[in-house]
Image (cartoon, rainbow, N blue to C red; front, side):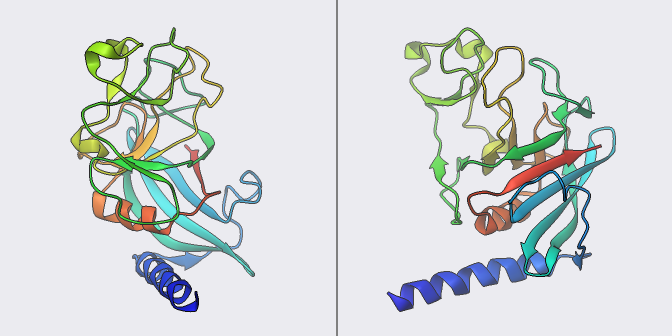
Length: 218
C-alpha cells in the first residue's frame, strides 16, 4: 500500500509545483473571498477586468493561511460580462461562490481528484425548463431524449475538451439559468461560463480535489 500512496503524493506535488511556478504566484493571507468560502481549501478566484475579460488566481489554504499557487491567468467570461445572479437566456457569468462537483470533457480523463465523465455525441446538458432533469447531464440519442434538445446543449464540442461543472442553480429552478461550466476557451467571450487556455485548465483539473470552489466577482 505504501508505494501507490507515495506515487500519488508525488504526482500531486508535481501538479502543485507546476501551478506554483506560474508568473505572479505569491502568498496572500487575506484574499478577497476569505470570509465566503467556508471550509474550502482550494479556491479558483475569478475577478472581472472589464467586459468579457477577467483574471484568474488559484489558491490553496495551508497551515499558515492562503497561498496563491497560480496568478494572473487570462480568463474569458460571459459576453454580457458578470451579473449578480444567473438568468436563463442572458449571457452573463453569475457572481458568487460555487461548488465544483465533477469534471467532464471530450478528451480522456487527465487525472485529478474529481469524478470525470468522458462525453460523446449522446451526452447533453438539459436546458429544458419544463423537464424534471433540467440543468443536469443526460445521455440519450437526440430523437429519444425525453427533453427538448433544441433548448439543451450537446456536450461534444471543442470548448468542452475539458470542463468542470459549476454548481450554479443547484435547485434547478426554471429561469434561474443552467449549463455553467469552467471550460476550454475558444479565444472569445462565453455564454456565461468561465474559460481559460486548455493546457492550464488541465493542470488545474489535475490539482482539484472534492470540496474546491470557484469564487467570482466583478
